[in-house]
Image (cartoon, rainbow, N blue to C red; front, side, top):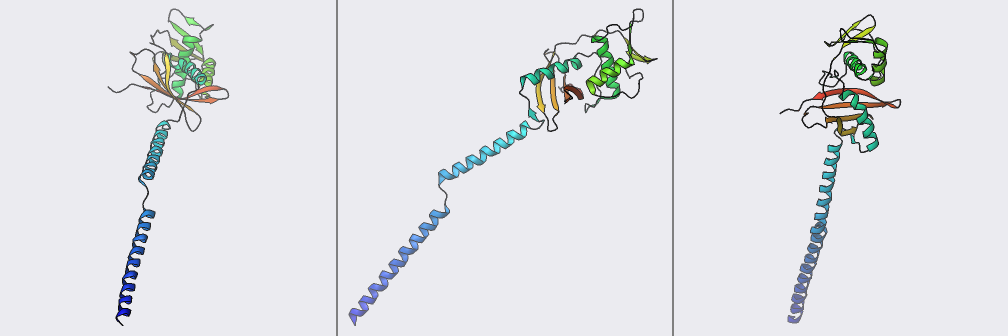
Length: 230
């Protein structure tokens, strides 16, 4: 009888030890499954951070569009904007860069006066150049792809209109430096957004232009001059 009791007590103690051992093994296993190694956590964090930085950089680059790096295209655009940079009178007043019909007339008349005045009548007593309205309309079509609606005097003290001719008083104006495109982007709609500065460092003013390529030539869409705030 005593022997039987001793055996029962031994078996009971053995069972308790087995249960405790199994419990410990289960806890260790669960702990191992739920915890990610430190090295894996670091890799995950690094990947997420890298992706975030890349996304921020991409957003920054795409504020104005895709940066243009094609040197040939940049040279062509730079040559095109020279005609606006050197124009004596062209300076759209709109803060948004919208070009009015009057702005187009002023550009065309000044452009003809400066660069395309061969065989035109010049009154040496009044110092006035007479420009046929058809020639003005042609320049406007070339640079702006716009059909002029009405010929009249634009709001400029140097220009009047009468009997089919724009009359421009002779003026001489010094324009410093040359234009250089420092920032160029191709926007989602395919147009080019340009920031144009002067090679003359004393010139603080710069211009923003939007140019469209249409039928194999550039067309000016918007243009505004910007004076940086001090």
